[in-house]
Length: 228
Image 1 (cartoon, rainbow, N blue to C red):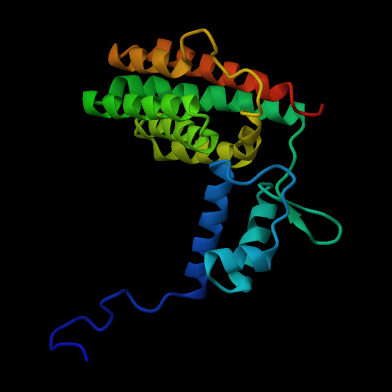
Image 2 (cartoon, helix red, strand yellow; image 1 turned 45 degrees about the horizontal axis):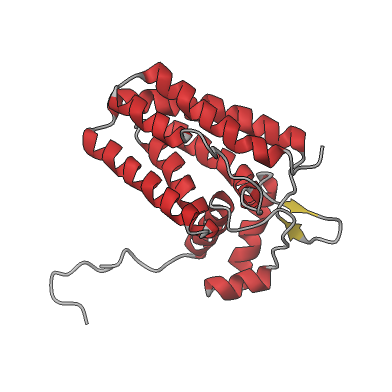
């Protein structure tokens, strides 16, 4: 029983079906952005629902929503899958990333505090350590943390949403970044280091160029593995 004077709904009321659907949508979307799903991977609603611990209906609604946003595809039998990007599509997304993330880096150079730049540097150090230890799943996560962290420093929610949407499409392809071949930036200064240096110097245009270089070099190895 609620104490006298307590609000009628201390927890904000019951969780609606729409809220569960939104949470399921967010979880699947996050997995796409964070390279946890692979190109060509089938997403069976029942299996996804079991993993999320919810019913099938909100998962099915979320999958259909992501299909409508072109983040997922559906074949003629109704099977939902992570799309397999060809080389041209990958180049298109890469080029859009350079424009949007470049603008984010330029804004971050004029707005980030020393403490925030230090945190970004710490993320890069974790990335290097995980890559050195061949923990490629963690390396991918830290790389993504760096890019999203940089864009947050731009203080632009609209820009950040665009970056999220691009990574939702591009994230699964990044799973191919480590496949036993040479790694990006082998033998040269890593792009993240150049970005951090530009942020510390508050050099907006060089920060733009540094993150653009990082995206282009990191994407070069991916392009060689994708169908035309």
